[in-house]
Length: 603
Image 1 (cartoon, one colour):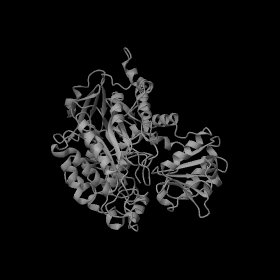
Image 2 (cartoon, rainbow, N blue to C red):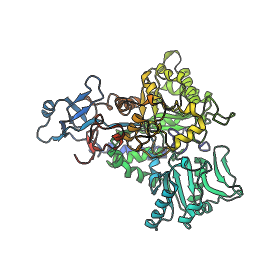
Image 3 (cartoon, rainbow, N blue to C red):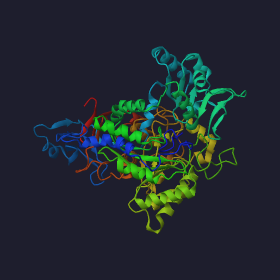
Image 4 (cartoon, rainbow, N blue to C red):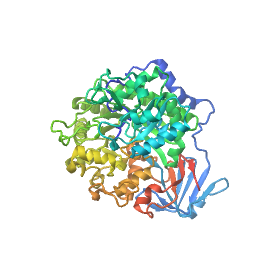
């Protein structure tokens, strides 16, 4: 279901080798040109806040500060918070030239820190949006799209739900009926599966004679009993083989220009969701050239179009390549005010639905298979030891309980007798964690980052229950226990990846974590155990100060405190006053990042 952390479309792309440590002078000059533009004589970057003052008064200010949990007013000067308290104190800053915003009882809180995203996946969201469970609804959308986009020579779509189809996947014939002469590529909502029509198979040269397996057991072209391709393609290596052949026809659906345009188009939407900071967990659209993602963001920053700050990483899953020289170079190259390369992301295992999550016990019905690690333990341990010694924070993708334990063992070995020190190492996902391993997170000072919106009994989770069995499935997403045992838990949507409905608003994820039920189904099944429902304060901390802590920014963002950066959002309703199943529907009426208003609607 999840897109392997930092490997938004490449969790199993073993055939690709990440960039080597040697960086040519030409590439170094090209990739730092945009950043250098900030130093132009006399220029002021478009993202920079002015010295203007903004006063918010008459509100319910939830600060996420234990010493002062609630206030009525906040004053901002330039990019900093200069006052938190009552209206009278705030209005001392409301002199000539200041904007005074009367909240009229609305809730104001810190901006959301999305601690696990993949901005490059926004390229998939162009074209037909088919995020529906009912195939007939998908066909209806595609028929309308065919009529309204008759000039498009290549049809791209995103969001179909793999769990709504048989394990053998959807077939090409329904797409052929709608698009007989134009190639079609529909990417699933988890980004691991691809649905194509006969025209695309023809252009890609995939026939009966084409070998089924691209990576045996991991990535293939589905075939019918007669050996003919069905139109279902599994995993990234097979997709990349198809994309390479399409380039010969002048088709590059996920090229650099398309991706850059998609990221820019989504900036207002992301600001409207209340997001002020991202941890980007991997620009894996370009596994061997991840600098492209950073370059796109730096260019947006230079042009004043980047509406969030982004802490990025190098993702890595190849045991034959040393990632340390690469991340060292990235950390030096990308250090603008809003865009930084900081973290080394390592993929320890795969995902549940592809049966590549690494488990302590075999999959249900498969007594000889429990998955395998993508990075062997000796390789993982060596990388963790070296990264820790150099002060490089790591972010480990672990879906299965064996992968979680292997990662904790690796950290314990890396720390030795000296302990974690001032490191912010993170294990992400950890959906299935052995109860005895939860306390080890706190003992080792390891952060747990997860996708709380997936802990609901939707189509994807029902399929996982079949693969894991009832007992294991019923002890997934136990992050209330994590928090109760003193573990720092942060949240991030891993977007655009998901198992069912695509979620891009943090408040939708908050609702899921609070109810453990599918949105729109207040009487529906609660993902067991119901005792793992999270409280609003726990969820808000996970989406603000804990994410800031993960990114080493807790002294700058994540709460409302004098001296911190002015990352603020105004909600149309107080989250503590609305019903549990209404949380995701609450609109953000204003978003401010670094003192700059990046979204405003009705305030």
